[in-house]
Image 1 (tube, rainbow, N blue to C red):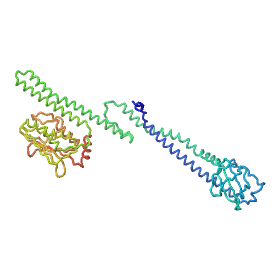
Image 2 (image 1 turned 90 degrees about the vertical axis):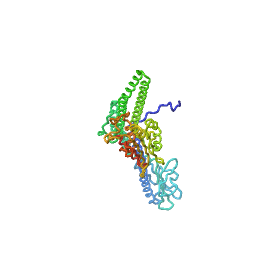
Image 3 (image 1 turned 180 degrees about the vertical axis):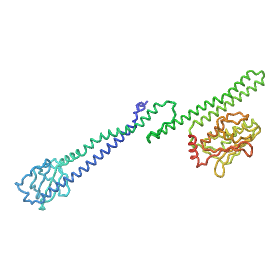
Amino acid sequence: MTESAGRARPAPWSLQARVLATVIGLVTGVWLVAVVATWIDTRHELNELMDGHLAQAASFFAMQSLDALDGDDFPPAPVLHKSQPRVAFQVWHEGRLVVRSVNAPQLPLGDRVSRRTQVREVQGQTWRVLGTVGKEDDVVIYIGEHESARRDVLMASLRGVLWPFALALPLLALGVWWAVRGSMRPLRELGAVVAVRRPGALDPMPLDAAPPEVRPLLTALNGLFDRVARMLESERRFNADAAHELRTPIAAIRMQAQVAQGATSDADRAQALAATVQGCDRAARLVEQLLQLSRLEGEPVPTPTAHADLGAVVRQVVQDLQPMAAARGQRLDCDLAAAALPICMAPALAQALLRNLVDNALRYSPQDGVVRVTAAQDAGGVLSVVVEDSGPGMAPDAMARLGERFFRVLGTATSGSGLGWSIVQRIARLHGLGVTLTRSAALGGLHVRVTWPLAGEGAQDASAAKKSVEE
């Protein structure tokens, strides 16, 4: 086992933790962007304001004559503000420093005369300098300010502006936590309700008091409960059907076995054993039909992606049932179109549908009867298969009941379970097929026609069939 495979996977975050982390992260990010934007804007405005003060001071010196500025008796400026020592000036005449403030360096503060301030490093100190010319052309005046002074003023301004934001951020995070926790309460209540439900409780959960965001989840749960209920009902019905229908053939097999045990002649024993084999065949067919019907009812509605050739399906079914027809002296005819007849259906289900139809036709047709299977495509592109027989036919009220479990027409001596038509109609509903029953004009018995939807209508009919089956 590798190290990564043996390492425990971290527990996933809860929905509340994800929402809190996302919201607080977004708020913090916006707060940081606002802080940076405030810092940039405040620094710009502060530079503009203080550069204006430097320009005003430079204009004052530029208006003075050189005689007024030069001389040893130039009085030092009185200190009127705590930041005043951070401001300095120099007056240069023909490259000679004529006068300077006490805190001004000996080297020139600037290197050019410009209307814009410049940042200069002079004797280890960073100055923001504005240079201008005096009354005389050869007089240059520099007014400078320590860069640290502006930085201190900027930080003081930001502290006054941003401390309310810094105080509001934890309060906002607390408010977001409280709001998110309250918003998650319906989910916690839903989890508590589901946790205390009995395992067999499949009744739907109420949607009236649920928030709109939770209703899709409840709807999905109710759909799951409904599907589980139908599956359990199908299993219970299958068990009941199997127990009910298997009782008769098993009893008959037991009786014939007892007859065979007590038979005194070989002829009686052979007859009893033949009846036993027939009973076993009937029971095996009944079990096969029950299992097939149970699978059809338990499986979801299939998506019509598989394809089969209707002609090939008909030929296979007719070939499989020919021995049964020959044993009864019946004729099983097959009439197929020359071209391929593609249908949107799994071949196994198509064979199951047609096999039950042909098997019923053979069982209810008399000795030496005729069963005809026809598959074709009409001018409109509709594919159909027709199964008709020469049997006695059915009354309209009996036709209406075809498909009911274990329904059989009274007065018939043919053995059967009545499940064949249930399988046919279930497959037809799953795939949106049309099934019509009439009396055969040619043979006199039952005429069954199954039609497949057109290729362009397959998805729409399958969707409608799915909705109908689920309802």
